[in-house]
Image 1 (cartoon, rainbow, N blue to C red):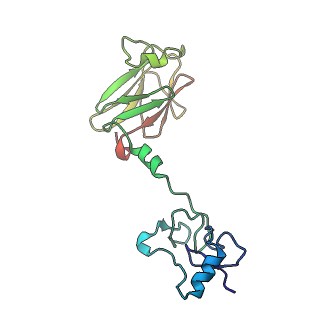
Image 2 (image 1 turned 135 degrees about the horizontal axis):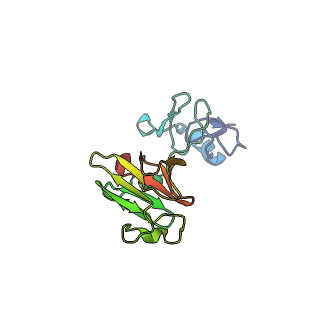
Image 3 (image 1 turned 90 degrees about the horizontal axis):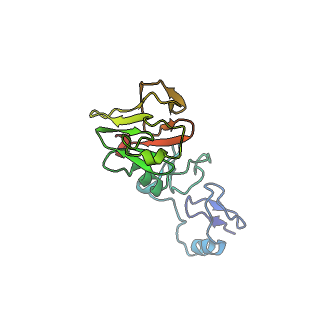
Length: 201
């Protein structure tokens, strides 16, 4: 008696199996597979190579379906593919600007340009963001983008320090910023550094 044929990789499995022993995909009903086989139709095969989702990093075999959890050849686990929504979120920026994403709100710095971070509303356009943080200086730090695309943060002689990925920026000095860096102001105000499309400011 014929077993259940996997519609993804074409492997024949036992009648009582619910997942393919080769690729781990959910198997079709046993009756449907046997009926197909009895009618003389060929067993389903993997999609053509032009529609593969990639290749296995372990053995290089083609991945016929992006939903596969394991390689159809070597059975090594496959890394999940990023969801389209996540990819869109990573590349959606406003006009190629540098963006600092604080818990309260994002702050955009156009290219070229700079902005002062601190509690002094006379100098910092985002002073309201730090109003409840007494440990943030009135003129704490500046963040900017140069015409050549270099991105930086400068500590403005703050009382409680400026940090990039937990590394202190010396008082009055400048440090470079990269996409994905964590910029910390004093002890508890943290922003994620995001650049424009393609990881460029």
